[in-house]
Length: 518
View 1 (cartoon, one colour):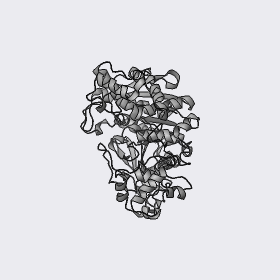
View 2 (cartoon, helix red, strand yellow; view 1 turned 45 degrees about the vertical axis):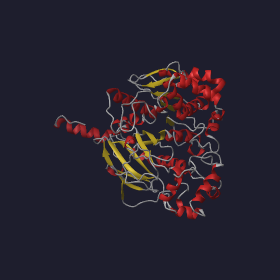
View 3 (cartoon, rainbow, N blue to C red; view 1 turned 90 degrees about the vertical axis):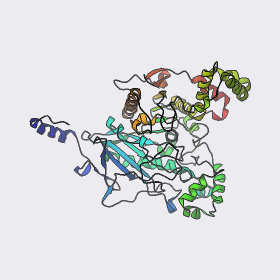
View 4 (tube, one colour; view 1 turned 120 degrees about the vertical axis):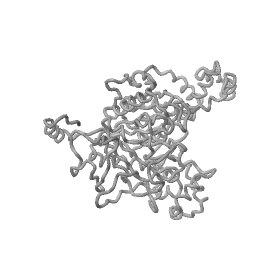
């Protein structure tokens, strides 16, 4: 607030006192949650209050390794909440960087970002971010997830860590016996525990626990679709956003039944541990190293009977998922540009005939290759569809069919400028910095006006959806409901909506890949 003269000082001060409220204790950087008092800090030139490294569960170490998250012990005095908590044990992707002190099993922390000024008794919508990384990498402390900018749009942002890889998803026969048949979904349990923490505490930060939007990208999007299907997460959120990923078909979707336990039991024994007690006593680094060796199982969600009672796709088919508004989509170049290298029309036709035989002509209708350029584009599209887009499409269609709530679908198309780790394309994960307004955290990128414009539009769409379940707001191109019109919003230099033109591709994949069907 700018004061233009002494005559304006008293009215302005009175307005500040009446119109805005400070959190508990009269200090905007001190908040009391159930477990104790926190001290945060100001970021983004004082526009946002940040409370970092807040524990939402007890450290999952020692005897608590591979157990459901336990309650956080209360603390005395004022806890410093100005630094991120450690990121979970992992081998990160090459393009990941973290703003914390390093890896640790003691990693169950979340961060809250809230506008520095808010109207008295206001209840702001909450956006609950679940990071990606294949369920084995990533952290809430990645710079691209920074909370400097989204809260300035009138929301409270929560970002979380959750156990990864072998620490988050080990499923052995011993763990199943110990957990009355349930084991293997500790990472998902962490997400649910964090959502419950939000329900209990977010009002202290100005957030509305009755208006929580879960959103995530890649594995985070898989998690969103999974939480919508989990009976333990029902009622903890009111909207959902999925960016490039869904627990439909093969992969990270809890489609692996109890058959996973024998293989993971054998793997655990190969480490030399003769009991769960010995396994829990092993150094975390040794367990992580063992999980990265050739032949190790892929540690991912399983059907445990509690967090997940059946394959996610079956829950949706029966209409038992959360009936909440959904905004979801994917990027144009999800599979990367490598699939197009050296591609020619003749090579594309030959590959189609080898893979699909008598159905090659049908394949080439939906993935055409009449010239070299068209064949290269179809190769990129097909790779992206198999990697992530087809499963995301199945999720969207399932929610349209049985979700009884609005559905909005997007396609992210603007090719980002070349950066340190990526060629110019709309690659997998490219959308994250646009959604968070954190373009300047991407190493080596030189941004253009159209990137800034699209980032602002996406921030407005995402936060508007969090506020009301409808992404539309004045000043934005209209985003029609996909469940009503079949139209898709194209996020590009000039954002616009148009009828879907890709359905034939996914109907072909459904026909040719029975294992991927609902």
